[in-house]
Length: 158
Image 1 (tube, one colour):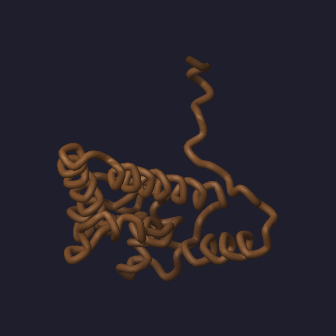
Image 2 (cartoon, rainbow, N blue to C red; image 1 turned 120 degrees about the vertical axis):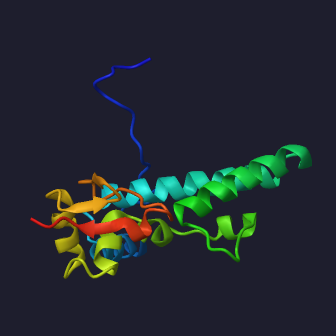
């Protein structure tokens, strides 16, 4: 059961953490998306790997199970904004990358909409409770913005 004060990790670390190419790739992504540390990057990578694992399992599943679950998975990813209108199939799910998920973070969306000058400034604005999504104040830069909430992002006036 485990100690309730110590929740399980929500990420997996790279197999070869000191590989030069891995380090350079991680450093580039951390800088490009203004992440706090590599743990945030590893969480996004774990989410993507879990989604891709579900798609691979569906490819090997019997036809009657596959049809219903495939439709549910595709709809969920479409609502999250990870899939576009023309690419609603399992192959497009297998082509998802960490960058696709990082593009859906609130921090990145605030920067891309021009509400902040840099991604680091966007993180600060979100953390200081200056961003409203719909009618809620959200102070988590890692919040994944759904397709419906995309147009509802604005900065709170004071």
